[in-house]
Amino acid sequence: MPSVTFDRWQVTTKEVCAKAYAPYKQGSIYLQMIIRCDDSLNLALRQALKGLGEN
Image 1 (cartoon, rainbow, N blue to C red):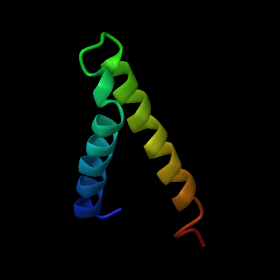
Image 2 (image 1 turned 120 degrees about the vertical axis):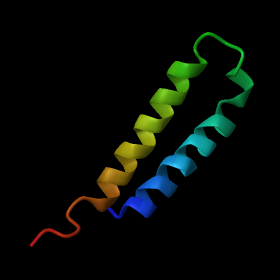
Image 3 (image 1 turned 90 degrees about the vertical axis):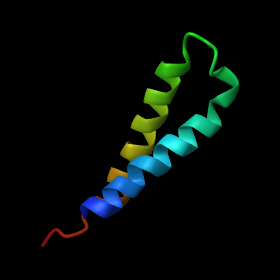
């Protein structure tokens, strides 16, 4: 993945996760929820790209 695309992906996932879990921002579990969200989105991306570029 080109670095520009990867950088955009990181920014987008951070924005999506922050927006999705904004109601929990003051809670002690917020950071864990953000990490889990980021991980889930990265897994979805890997699954969507699986097999691309393979010969």
